Length: 544
Ligand code: F6P
Image (cartoon, rainbow, N blue to C red; front, side, top):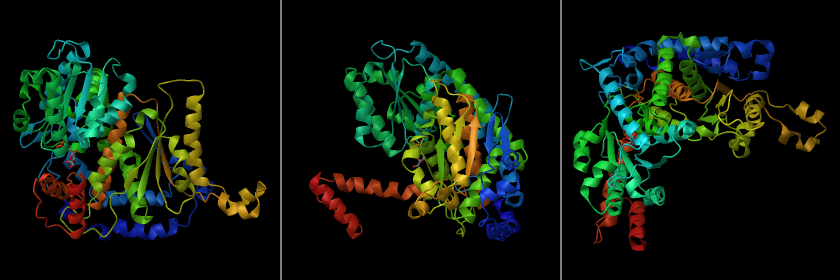
């Protein structure tokens, strides 16, 4: 399909945007608001209770029109239909991309290789629900007959970041007499600290790995097995009560020693970073319960429907995605700051880093040509207001343009005196300060000595989106995640890249395998690296 789409630089809308950007760059948000007082109300959109104010962006109606033209000329509509209908749009891996099937209602049918995948999705969800119910009620007993009190998810990347983010985000809804831990790093400290106060006979490990071959996860899983067995008297049969697997690879699960009856399946058409709503979300379901998990899925699905059916002008993921392309390619913006004003979303920026950067950190098009434009920006962020007291200085007065996404809620889950009003006042204040700043004349008028005026000027004209929702519920979280998933998709379509492969992680993995042998070799290994790597290996060997 991409073959029918002209290269980005020769799409008419792209050329028009290049010219148009010249006229927009000198314009000030201050003036744009002055000349169009309705702008703050007009440049907004809403989907299922998620409200997006994108008026504080350096755009006009003409910009939006050209960005919409670009989406059309890039085949966004056709590409998203191709995704939703199970076509193999992940061409470098020859796979369908169907995270949307993970939240499709039972009544839908999505065909991949001649088979409807929706019934299998619901069968796994039902199996997860039964299992989660047994853990939550205490019916599932460990090897020594005690109920499970601790759930440790072992996984990395998409098999960790989604689960840990969702656990933190939805802690308010979690069963508080269960303890959840997440082990990802191959650094033994991660495992050691996660289990140091846990009792093996009350601890269940969820080994989460799409491939069930990932070095970090397999190393941690083996360590967990040893730790469990050591604490449970060494009886191999204990594994069945204390380990379950979440994977697409039944053979490797069986080889590890986990009964495939205790395996929760997913499929190769679910990308790791798009898998938190598959069986990879088992820890989430145990924490918040099957009903809340289904509400989470309903939120995802609501945003899927919005993305698929809403005209692009009112389509939240399309707007967010196109604005990111606008700043990345026409304003030389290198990053996007994600600033949730919600403590429960503290891991949301980290989660989005994999989603966005593993997806769109690509330098060639689908057909393998080197891109001449910038692609995936660096996503980063911290919850407000903490960020205000560390890096916001650079966003307000530094030399770089950093588009920001502020995320806030009308209601808090922990109403405590004035806290929430104070928190939300900061969202609105920061976005206002970034956009409109403070001129030298305004600073001088306050009696500031001339010598200090330049230091106290806020140039403004710094763009942001404000995303608001009622309260952080499972459903809202699903909507928010799907919003960014589809924004990433939109960006990838404009850049004509494969947002669903991740070849860039391979080389380091292969080299590490080789170097592990060299570090562990009892005799001096013959090294064939560059002089720097060789020297570092020698140093390590002589000091370890
Ligand atoms: O190395 C990157 C990656 O493949 C991610 O895409 C993935 O989420 C992560 O590793 C973990 O993979 P797995 O779930 O197969 O262990």
